[in-house]
Image (cartoon, rainbow, N blue to C red; front, side, top):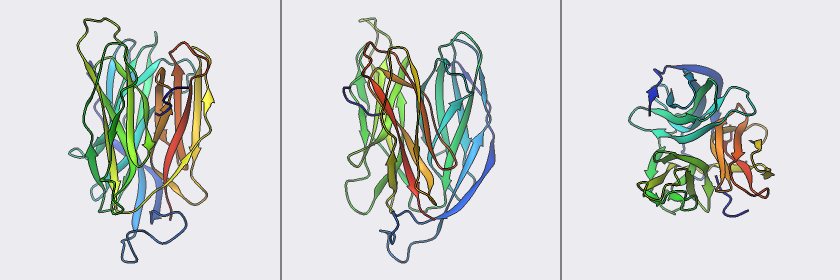
Length: 284
């Protein structure tokens, strides 16, 4: 199915705590790669103020991390509407604002509600690496951006995000080969339209995460699918996203208490296109 991977008005945003808090030593059932002296970490989730989205408008929402923590993952969901044509443009960590930002476009004919969420960690080694902008021609969907943490064994990708240009919507924000990969489709098909772009951001840590993936769901042309990647028992999500065919666009991507859920729509012309979810997990 090809390379399967995954503003007009801004809402005023405030964060409230979601009651999820567990200690985390980010390993897959074994000692931390950071060594026996690694500090105990905690992971919490915060939700931001939702945005009421009028039809045909682009909105920005955010969820903020408390002082002493940093964002490792995040996203936004749309209230349960199986035909909601809301498409994600940006979903990425804003280190300066200590928050996770999401921009999405309401392409439906009715009002929608967008709910932001962020995962926050006390891990002092969290940092961010922004990859280069990859240009997109009008109608193009297959020039992904990539960001990595140096390809060493001292810093690991544990999450990431995507940013894209005008009228350019995410089809992938996911891990791949030790990098964070961001792919988007430029939906302006006018050959005289200006270039757009896609950009990936990697969330990095000195401690490795455990990645899990859902099965791939194939979508008929125009169909909407929801996929979920679950952390193993006793682990919690710290990052995640979706990985879809270039013409399958993400409607929502966000953590749950125990995993990561993605919804996507097949805007292409092939019934073989699909999507799966990715989650990075932390062990208590």
